[in-house]
Length: 639
Image 1 (cartoon, rainbow, N blue to C red):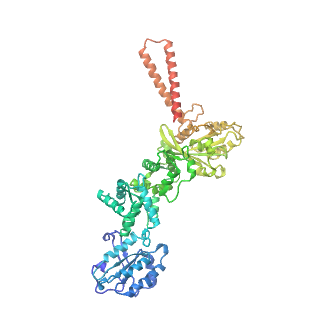
Image 2: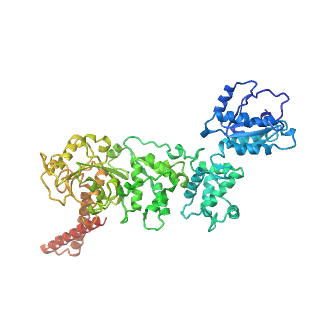
């Protein structure tokens, strides 16, 4: 009542009415609902109900009444603890009232009680009569809820709790932009601006570092703050009652009151309509590139196992297993390359965008790039039907499902895409096998990602997801007479009426081709269903297998309804689109060059009209065309 009226009432009722202090008159800008309790007017059951609803409890005792002080430990604290769970105890504030009636302090009596019960946040002596510390009391009560000491600090040990150290260590690593183990002045200013919206003045920076230097030898190194110095500063804040500083930092980096990253931070809302896919945008790739560069300490454009482990120290678990090394490109040591690293992120975003958001949250994307959430890193592509109608797409990731009977060579087809021949594939452990492979291809000079997925061979268990893709590969073993039957069955039952482009792969083409035990040969089957003839493929090579087939698959996925007459007279050229368009462009160029040559020669030698001239011109044009086509093949092979 003294708080509300700012004067001591002459007549004090047994129980004050419930009041709510509006947010705009409190330092923390939160509304505060205050409930009084009186043993004379209320039952214990009513007390228990209020305890269950309370965020903080103030136990009031009279500083001039010894029995009142003793009742704090003999009655009130045990009663409250009995009615609350041990893991979710409500913070307690001890309030010594009537300080105006005594000349001495009760703190000597209260301090042992505070040390005995960890739930006691603080103790305040006040006087309702002369209004001493009344507003401060409720400020501390708010602070105990918004900025509790319990999760952060252990008063007995006088040090930060392990969960707090873990959270602050992650924050330090995210803020250490160059990963040198030191927060330099630029990084400290970035951290300060991120958490408190204002940079530190140069003198203030030096003052902070000097405080650390005076208290510990290894808190400052190379004029920057080490992790130990960073943790010491937060310990100092808490010991001096500035819990809100540490809590502001923790909450800015996504932590809740239990020092766990919130669901809202890790999984921001993102809507993905049907028939749309999810990809990383340009800023996300720039961020991931900076993370890669930060941890590639030896600058070999690959992440060693130690560097991968260091990168994921800001995660509560290791997100990548050994199968990742067989999903993306690696170097000779089996380490994930820069291209493989980006490919894995692309794969995760395409298959499970929620997981990708979670991972970006652990890395601090929204904090480093000052975005509202990591959802800003994701592009949701437009509906595929619109792409088909407009006959163009802005997508960068295309999915190819690879189907075939067991042992047909599907796994080899996936691994060959990553540049691994049969000899390298034999070194892959069975428990490290991956059913995905992803890498980049180039279509008309544009970099695109092709995602290969090996579907399970059991025909009866093929799901819609196994068939929902941009292009399908049907793989059979040319050396197994019963292998093609599976491909024919899948096509006739699942794909014959589909608009998805389909390619038949004659795998293990280095082996002797046997007659397939099916009513039609693979070539006749493809001709009947207007498919391109089976494409021979082998990964039993001395060098890395050819990637031409994968470029064609990507092209077919990008242009599923393009129709050009095939140069091999198959009358359906979705498969040959890439090759044919390049040939047509080359022929157009050659034709234009030929016309210019003939025209120039004709103008220069207008009087020369004999047959010898035209024979030479034709021969020159032929040579020019052959050289141009050879250059095209060389460039394509180089790509």
